[in-house]
Image 1 (cartoon, rainbow, N blue to C red):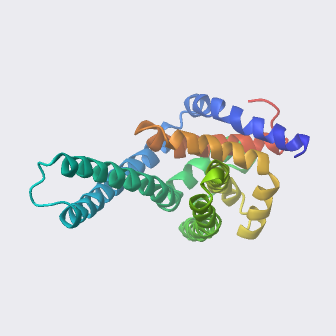
Image 2: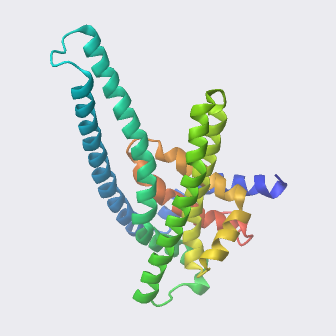
Image 3: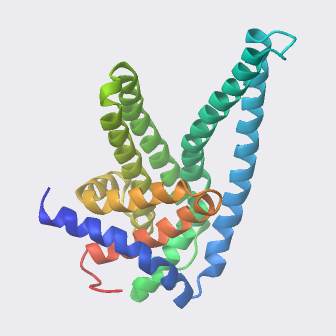
Length: 259
């Protein structure tokens, strides 16, 4: 890792500090509340669906494993254990699935917000006429890249998850690797919104983001950490990460020395 990696990593972290003040200074609230509203709906619907699935799985397992009369201490203990395990697993699956849903369904609204941030940073390129054809093309481009990221991420993290089960002594190491991989693709998603605004091809965007590995990881790691904050973190993290990524990549590329 060279000096640029750590410098870009630092810029990614500090960009989160300036994201909120940037939104406030430029009065971008109208562009913020739309993705928050979509995110709230997505969060509620998906949480309800996973809770319902968990309840059905729990009812099936209790019917198979527990006696009809459940007053015995061991039956009660097993019932509580099943509830804990099932809802813990469903919670983990929900968080992982929600990230993928978020990457897909928030793309149009986050793309508009990312474009507005770049219009402010690049006033000479602002006020371009809106085109539905270009907007739909951007959605398809973003959807294709999101599916690409999801497939690559799963191809990397599932083997690591299996290895952690077979080699529990190394489970902490594999878990850290999984977090880094997931964070990279979270960072990838929001940084590509800037590249989409710049009309960069998907192939060039992938190469550019990989070459900014330190910045991509730092943006993704904070995005990942914020998603773990109950309710508020889930709702606001995509918006905060989107703005931070746009501001940060502007600094990384040397167009702005301080915000």
